Length: 286
Ligand code: SAM
Image (cartoon, rainbow, N blue to C red; front, side):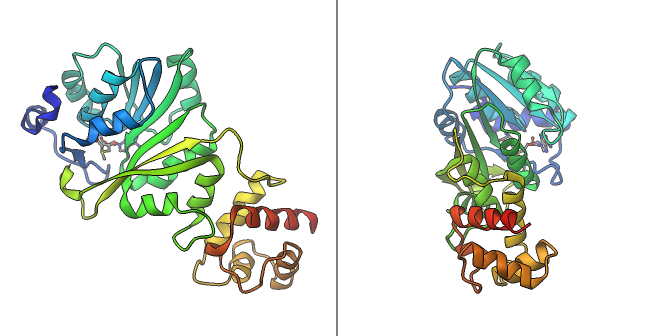
């Protein structure tokens, strides 16, 4: 068993390097030894696969990913963790650590250069403060990856995985379902982290689709409609769209009528197909 499953060993290395946890960087490190092996096992990697990890922290998940996959590239923003990672991952020759910001890094270039002949998956215990923007970035860039397996806060997992047309859905649910087929894998209690966050987490896997499940005539217009629809989720769709798209109410009513959507409907009741119908109606009425 790796030394990295021993919390006292990890704490010792962090202490030796004078490391203190940064709340602003979402630094809640996993200390439950059962979680990382499960994540690594379920992320879809094998010896022929390359893995991109975002935020390796002290390297506990990286260590498991390196054991099950062909190669791991881990992107860590906090430069104080680089010497820590050099020490904790010393036994793995198939790990590259990059000190960079995952919100800015060119992932297409990274995949081309680091994994020219490998199928790639992404696996991460995400820093909570960038859950939605980083997921949206990874999806919208249409990276050539098979799946994205991430630990996120439980509420975020529920929202991300909720099917459009159901009560828990939001703009991110529609975007996620457009690009992938999401699955909730397992829950992780707040006590599994150091320091412990206030809420539980969950691991989800986003299996990337080859084709979107619906056809919208214009993808950009589709996402604009989705975002505008959820801007004021307590209001009716016609009010949200009018405010979100800065469109006169009469034009929104014409658009919803053309798409055969009831005027008192709410965003959370809309299926992907209905969002596509509204998009197509808006383009036809331009
Ligand atoms: N993987 C480790 C674990 O499971 O114990 C640490 C996970 S911790 C929730 C998130 C990690 O992401 C931290 O190491 C933090 O420094 C790093 N991080 C925060 N913002 C980042 C960014 N924009 N790009 C890359 N890494 C980031």
